[in-house]
Amino acid sequence: MATEHGLSRIRCRACQTTSGHHRPGCTRLNGGAPKSDLHWAIPRALEVPPDQLQLRLNFYSQAVQMEVFEDERVVTKMVSALDVAHALASQLSVSTGILPPDTLWWSNTREGPLVALWREPQVTRVALQEEFDKPPERLAIPMPGLIFLCRPGQPPWVYAAKKRPQSEKDEVFRAPAYNIFADGRSCPGSHRYPLEVEAIPGSFFMAFFSRTGDHYDRSRKFPKDMKALWRSLDGRRTYPLRDLMSFGTVKNLMEVR
Image (cartoon, rainbow, N blue to C red):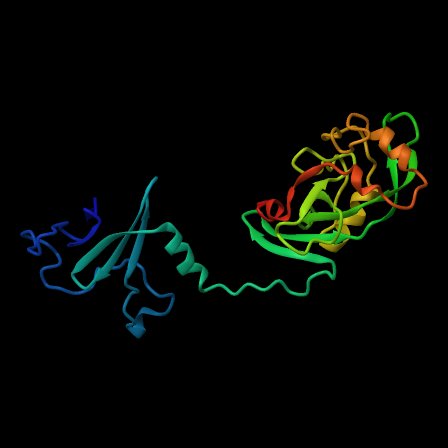
């Protein structure tokens, strides 16, 4: 270990002693910085000295060790992986650019930027394809306000809300639509989504809907029959908000990674 009871220890990089006394034959007895095999990509005739190793991080399964090279000695200590990440991230400059007008929030996740978009309640034309050898059933149904969590070119997460969210505590509901799993993820099938995130909500409704995903418990009146729900809504102008099934809160959606 490079530390003892959580304290830093100093050792010679060449002979590995920590007592402050070098072993016989140690190449560091004459002092000087650690030798480096790295040279600048410039002519050697300019006599520019090689670049010297200043610091090294060793990542173990449960710890991170930092080694700082100071002349003829090496100072080692344990550091937090989070502190290392923050130190490196401090050199980054992150900008969202111009966001779509209906953006609710933006987050940078491990899978890339994620944009939450609000879609106002509106009558929407949908196509339900239950059998491949028959034409789809086309309906014009009112949809409640919807929240789309979008990444460029990828299928979105889709949820419903009774009004445009204003707080992390606002309640969200299961979207009353096919092609959506229980956690809100949508199933793309063979549908390809655009790279422009603002076009993803419209693209979602251009796809053919089928009995994929989890289409149960989307309606209080028709908990086991999404088709009956859609047929009952066909031709109506507004969605009955009391029929929505609860999913969680806006905060739950903000935790999607």
